[in-house]
Image (cartoon, rainbow, N blue to C red; front, side):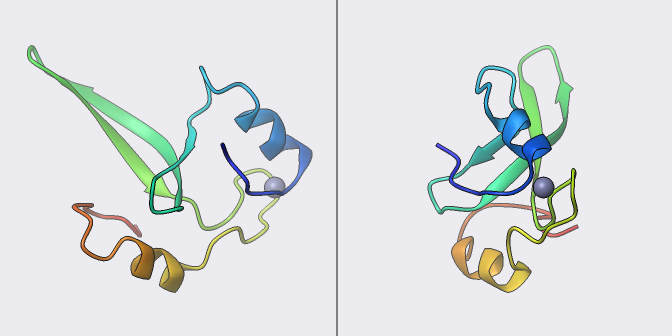
Length: 80
Ligand SMILES: [Zn+2]
């Protein structure tokens, strides 16, 4: 369940969970899948924490709050 509220473009993008690239982790941080790599044995997904809505530019999350919520998580390049 994504409880972030923003513009209609964002709401449309998160309305269809099966195809949505947005997800909220257990720590409450909103992420966007930005790519993947595939090998013979596995597929790896690359996710980026969302700070600004990609549709209207509204700030949805604060980098400092994201850092606190993800402290201790095994995430690399979280705030590129
Ligand atoms: Zn928006």
